[in-house]
Length: 396
Image 1 (cartoon, one colour):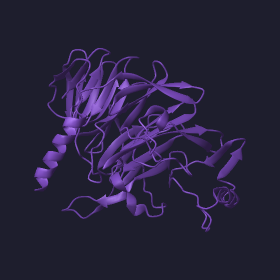
Image 2 (cartoon, helix red, strand yellow):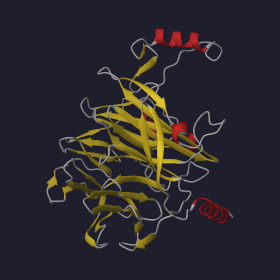
Image 3 (spheres, helix red, strand yellow):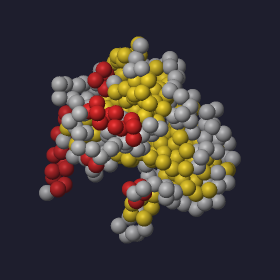
Image 4 (cartoon, helix red, strand yellow):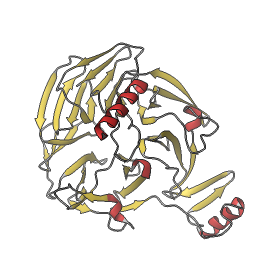
């Protein structure tokens, strides 16, 4: 009975959300599989399949260039040098240079710091510069651990849903809990310490009756974490961050951090926030822009009703783009006001894949630009998509 209901559920969703593209689309069978990661250098795509195989193919010739087995994650340096990590914990560059790693673990993801030192996220924690770091200093740190499998009851560090290293060398590890919200764990690469977002509050009986009085009490209680200047209220990072739903994307531009968030649980709830960096003391102000860009109505107090996905900076025109169930859009900024320009809406399948949702997961999880008008994007069901400005090619 459960299988029957899930089948109906998927068919209804597909009929409602699978889109007929206004531009041509075709499929190329490269490896006949779906992917979990990719990096692009020129026209070459370095992709990792869900079965941990590295497949390198060319977008223009549609041909496979190389394949390697037992590869878990791939990343690239600022100079477009490719690095990947194997199931045996070996970090290797595309020039076959191996970087030593003496800590044994099951790796999830590989990143690089600004000097190309590997950052390995694994089932034991964070491996960085020859040391293992675990969030033992975090209160209720059990939230970041789970059972390895039904057979093995060993507790392991959980694989983050999305990882981002910002320009201040703060690593964001975000977790999608579906209807149970989100968790964000940070790691400072310089201080070598974990920390998480914090919520400031005081226990008084007038919190909801007199907001101004409550805010004065809040400032008095936390003078080192709240600052009021002119018409702006600033908070010390990472307190009072406007994160309400699972994070879909993080992008930095000119001192601003853009954060896209969304959840589908019976209905859709999306938020789009900006953190404005103010000073060296880590104070910031925030702005929510979802109703300037996304579909909102008079009841959209907690978020927009358009299913928001990942975001990306187009380095060729210095503009930020986002994806939602309505397609790809370019964000147009003007004096802290935001508008959008429609790019295209791909034909793409949807599915219910998050065990904590009653609904569907976003069907594009990452995209990046290889020229001003060319986009490579990662889907959950259709492989890797390539939009060349005129048509879409899906590589499976």
